[in-house]
Image 1 (spheres, rainbow, N blue to C red):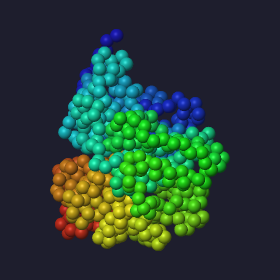
Image 2 (cartoon, rainbow, N blue to C red):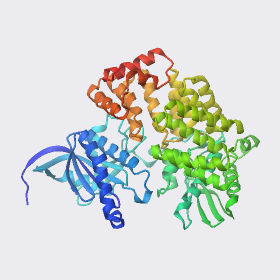
Image 3 (tube, rainbow, N blue to C red):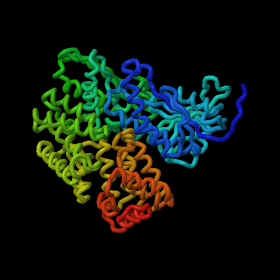
Image 4 (cartoon, helix red, strand yellow):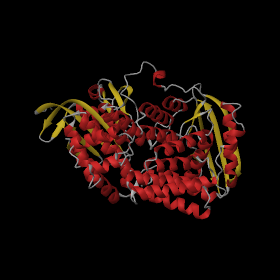
Length: 590
């Protein structure tokens, strides 16, 4: 039957909840309440705030219309990021996760409803979208050719159910540099290999009957990464990026292409009572050739000896000759008490989730570890970094008090091990944010000397150089940190400070792009909104600058230009004046 009505061009967003039927079967009343809360707190405000209209809902599905495809994609990205933050404290198997498809095309409207192939294509893209992702059609992608702040990856032409022609399909990718054109061959998607042996250690799989033992597997993976990264002759992807591959089915070749490494380390752990079985393997991912593998059947207390052996075997296989006395001396001394080690592993996961509740959990776990082992350098350093993050976010205590607590913990750790990389990072942050940029930078250099692959130290050293006006070196270090750990939660600070350096070099469009990347990685960091607000204003986008200024005032009541300038330790007077000018143009009070 033919339809009559008004035709118009529209951006169509189709979204649904992954595993909705399973969640409803588990607890219908609670699931309905959680879905409604997400609609009230995230979906509706985000959509309407960007000019969209919810056309209809069908159980777990939502159909949305925008007049602008740019606003549609911006809303989809914000909804995914905000939902992920909202659900972070919930066990992974029970989280509400959206998948979203977007298409630009001609629609037919009847009353409040819309119809047509444009709607059908958006719905079919949503059906093939991975959980937590955003897929868009070629017609939508064509509107983003000159919008580098929206990075996409070409997925090829997809044959969608009941759509008579293939549809060019793109995935919105967090952390890419620019939208990519369709690659002529698979090899064009590979990052360039560094000039030294390069590897990534994936999280070891938990084969135990108890799912809670996953943390034990994570601890083994973390310690292997930490030990390997201390060898300057190796290029080692950081823990925070490696762990984004947890529970993902992905080939070693795809890992190699995405991260730009030659070798991939994998393994599994089975724990039964006090006995563990650890398997580990090293693969040349470019040729798909096994290089080394082994199995260890030991008591759980032998886990540290197993880790040491795995490290020696890997280093010996990929870079013979670097396992020298100097390398051995740089290894972190592990906790002697297995319970302390387990507490630190659990806390590590909470620290890097970047939520206030996780910060509370991390402090509790680390203080319990320190009660059992007060001289544990790893626990002292991680707790110090947790206080430093509190200062950056403004959680719990006034920032000055959090920085003082971080510095005290770092200094205590350094009394026991003056070379500990994390403790030097924490002290460097405390000194730098306290405006002693030279001493802070020196501490980051000491951390890098101990751990040449520590993206955290390299990135924060780049931040310190940016505050001092050494922009070229700052950008080099920040990009080096992002290369070592492209999926790191800490990348929000590195993107943001690429924005800072662009801003003070008066490249305001690039500054806008970098601050948007930072906020896309973590929209719950209101301090990043200052930079985006100032950059938009200086770039002439005054309406959007004022919109962001209102959000900034909502999240940081009483924020002023003076407080915003004082929040970052800029050395050059002209930089402080330029920072203030951008905020002033956006309408922030003095």
